[in-house]
Image (cartoon, rainbow, N blue to C red; front, top):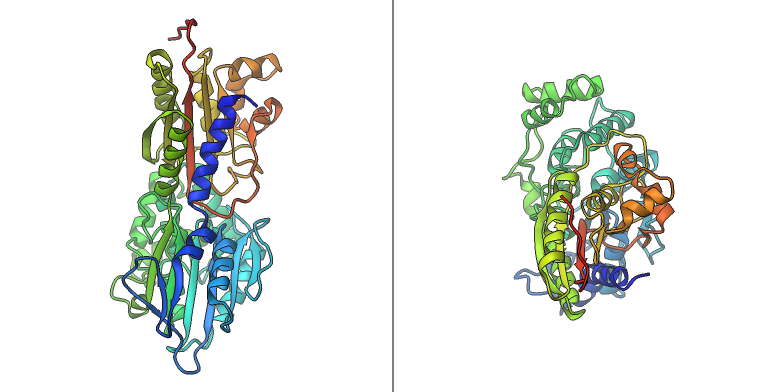
Length: 451
């Protein structure tokens, strides 16, 4: 592994460490005498259960196991029970909390059954009860409770179409909320009248609680009408299941109640603390890059938009640094891009981003790009992301691969696998979007030029 490759990985790992939910809860959530629990500098205390009340731990998301393990440690010898739903392969045993697994990014039967058991656990809740609600990215697919008239196959088809269309996370979640019995504030109604402390790892730029995991315990600002606009925007009206369109149309006509809005009494029972976000990881990555001797610059802290447009802009900046910088430079970005999938290959948005950067960096010496998902998974692959440099394009050609054809078929995973340039971490225990890392090491005495 080259020095730049090792350094890029070290910078990425610093971002992961900063967003480790177990570490953040362990140092932040403490029991305050007999009053209840306080988190860090938060101004409120989450009270202990009333007489005869119970403590429950419920939640969902890729990083929910890390959260639940830390809450179990904080509760020490207190009595509690709970259930969480995580992505297949992301589970591990806990002391008392039951860990279930389900499908992501597409929901599946396992997630459906796990969600039904979680809802049954919440039956009979009382005002004296306290609920630790653990929410991380991935919960939108893992908490599966289709609304009346919509079945699991309908939700899978709808989710797949939206993911392939290039819809962003807020648009995707707006529709998910209006096809669900748990999203968009409806889980708060199920947990009522118990008091709720939401502990959240954000995978949404701006940390909008109504978008993280489709906002199960907060007011939903979107409407059925918004959903129909999204359907039209991406040309999906003729492709979606009829049951989905019928529900959205009926809701827009006022024939189906909207998702919970501000003022709903159940929502007032929930308080949320955002533990980790992409911003926190990005700052830690910058600190680590500086400690390695790089002049570190944040390219974008709100990276959204099309993979290929961002790749062009990022590579252009790296090329300029390679020409002009006299010291090692790091260019960093965080967020979540969208990728319109038209091919039949295997890959994810980070791997395609890195390959698209390689196209623009052909022949540029002393550059390295790493893009990876902080959850350890990029798209439907076992890789978190990939590396590329100025030689990637020609190295692929030398192995008989055509990078242009690979991009057209969205097949970056196989290309990077052949090159030995995949980043594979396994489940990381956190989920705060993606990190994009570009490193430049000035190459004295070399010259290069491209259009």
